[in-house]
Length: 497
Image (cartoon, rainbow, N blue to C red):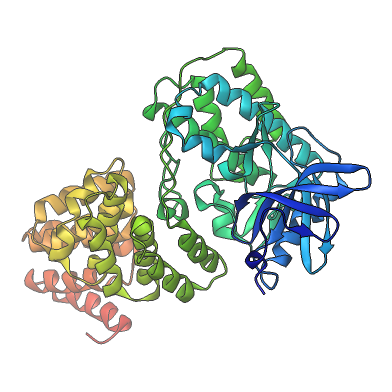
């Protein structure tokens, strides 16, 4: 029987609690403000109960398993007790008279009064609380605006919800539970199922980025899973203090070893910024794209190596239009990886037809389509996206090489040759680039140069069939039968001529 069918204000849980107000509902449980009943009177507490006793009980048990044994801290919502009351598993916690940071961020009128000074003060407290948790060998694992309660009495953010917390028995703990919002999770959680103290620091950086820049560091799940570059906050908002901008970027290093080392160091750095008393107002944060619950499921399945199931979950998420763009991205990428090439093309193409697809996502999508069409030898289709690839800031060597191949196949030979020469200037021993240059020169009827480059390519790639064939033809046309025969024998060793 589902617990929510009979829980209501005034409902008593045995002789222990009387429910007063439903505070919030999560994926696995509800939180109620409640009166704790005893012979000495009543006390206001928060109690968490499972939505479904058959599904959520195990998850709720995780809330208290680490927190019951540590001292109380003013910046951490304490867990007082957990156990069964009748048939219901209950977690009793400190009641905080306040709301999550996410609610304040969503209220434009109230957020308009928030200043950088407020943000720095709040997160100095968060860093202190995290330092306390880490000193007690606990990694929170799910720092996000929903789990930071703004206490009306103390005016500080208090960390809550320890369902994904883990003991720091090692620097990084392997776990297969991905309950956190993907927008704030460290790369090692999404990619390697690992979390630790340094993962908490990344998450703090992501939340800080969101509140001071007004946008997410990586706005789509594709950007997160592919480690897309993060734009500095000050590029969105020049009013951000330079020290805060630098600090956030140190927190958001993808490599945990390159990240800011400890929460205590973070607290000290933030405390030094507080002295500036920066009173400028911060921008209204962009909301998380809705539909992320479906995407969380897809990301969780992907992390467990269940790509086919993750692809189906991403397809399901595309049915919910508010989360369409990240869902299409994930579905397209997984379709490409799993060999559903036409599905990938259709999904990527649909992303380009949507008016509200962000420019970064659009560029990434066009690059992906070019790569697929190149692999399929559909060069004319790929050519449509060459200018996009080359027009991106600092295109990769692989993308430039692919562009040169596409241009050569589409008879844009001079431009292809120009790109290949640029690549060779960066690394002259690249056999693949030399091979393609020999091919382009041959198509341009510059046979002597093509032969010279083909010989250079064979020094690096002795079994290049393309170069050996061109040299057989060249030496035959030049009357050098002995040389032509030498190259022909080398070609026969590779396979039938």
